[in-house]
Image 1 (tube, one colour):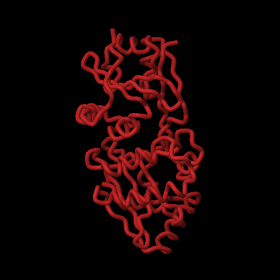
Image 2: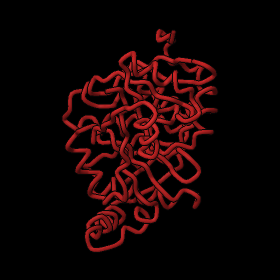
Image 3: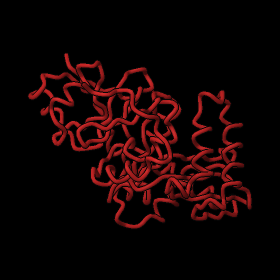
Length: 288
């Protein structure tokens, strides 16, 4: 009998999860402790341990109950995976390479929600912004760097007051209700960056804090951006932020993961304008 009650995800779980995540080397943005911890309430995460394997029980943004494995799925006892699915859970997020295993072994079905897909870019593209279509981005960067006296500083928690000022200004300009934004999770990340091992950059124009990026290595070749907030009153701020940060990263990071768009049209348009190199689908596997 599988114990599905679990325990709430807490700060004390960081080492246990990071150990599993590092061994997985996953590309999905969910496989980052900061992401899990900062959005623990939205997904109602519960920590499960069965037969020496670690799992999270959660709820997707569209209300689907799922189990998230933290071991390679082919190394998890088949009866355990089958038991989760028999209890009405989907297994999520599952990579397309593992789908044949589930269909042949369990006769399972699968689907995906495009709102979940991660936007993947080559780091070189964000550095160089090549081609005619990305010429607009190059122009925006040129305008920003011409119009303003700018400074980009590697982020640490001493810069939290300035990042919070930029976040507050971003929120004012967004025109969105607080509950429709990630303001709470973002402010927690700003203040708790050391504990969460977040890296990033703070951006200043004419000595005013106008933006920040926060993220972390997802694997040896991929850096994931958890938060990118810019004050759009400063023209070109986003193009400058992405470009400047990509140029600052160590060269082993070949890919940038800008996470999903959550079905929000403004995010979809903003991320698509950089011409993603891949939309990384995350599959939900369940029994028929």
